[in-house]
Image: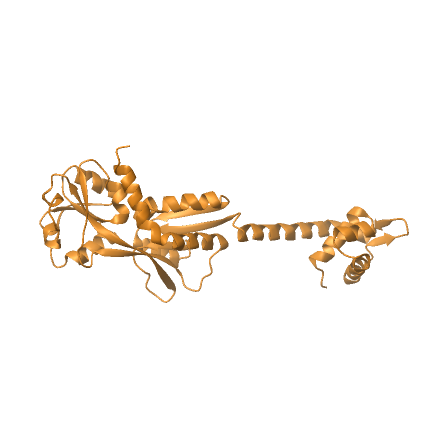
Length: 310
């Protein structure tokens, strides 16, 4: 048995209107084509659905029995089709991503705000976690993709570079390094350091750049805001990526870009290789890739706005 949605639409139109001419017009068919479709449906079902006279069209008992099922089937299909079109046209959907806390707090709010304004029906979920956790969430299929500070290892993953994140020295105005013309690794190693924990990508990049020099660590912390408060209090210096600088625009602090070989980190969008994204996820992924050249320009504008007296 091969019954199409067009067959159901023709049957429902005739059941509602009880007139072949008007039902044919509703379904955009000629009278002869419409009559043929109804006859074909009756043949497929093996039952007469309508009693026809020159003056009236009425449902048979078999037609009345089929009517409820036909309405339900047609309604279900219409609902499925509408839902699909809403997803395809980004009127609804869901995207889940993971991101480094630095990007999640600095740049992503701007992107999310614009994306939500354009696609208010799409639900956004964000996991702000460190690099290893970002990769693990992608690999497990918990998130659609992630923004991480390293590409994932393995043939099941692929990564596309978003930006290069440079590192900066942050210290108090009164610190000796605040006015030093050029700062090298050995200069940093001579002073007390306030660090993020060892499993952070920031700490890992610093340890590679300092090797073999030791770092004079006085505090090891989990949150950038706490690091900023301790540096502001004069307990030591810190070195952090440019993406985190919004946390350090505080009175009494100096921010100085560093030019130390090897001291930078690449930021990537990481996703599963060969795994298609949903319509909603594609839309956000494309937006992030389109914005990648403007990440640091946006952050500099933010910093300038925070530092201005007004």
